[in-house]
Length: 45
Image (tube, rainbow, N blue to C red; front, top):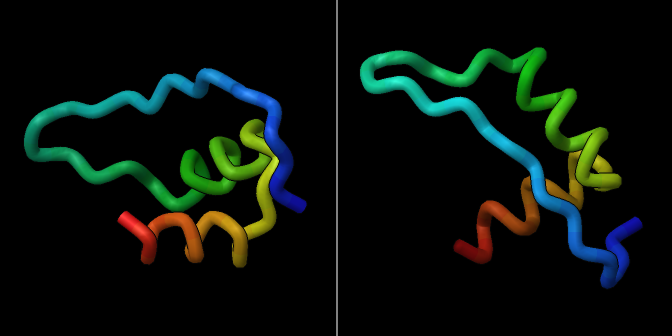
């Protein structure tokens, strides 16, 4: 469930490397989002 609290999440970005699925799942969990909410936010970019 999305809420209005602000959370700062650090996402490591290295040129030429992809973020691994496990790390994406950890980031989604830290942000307090469901997978569906995360994907919806990505589509809105």
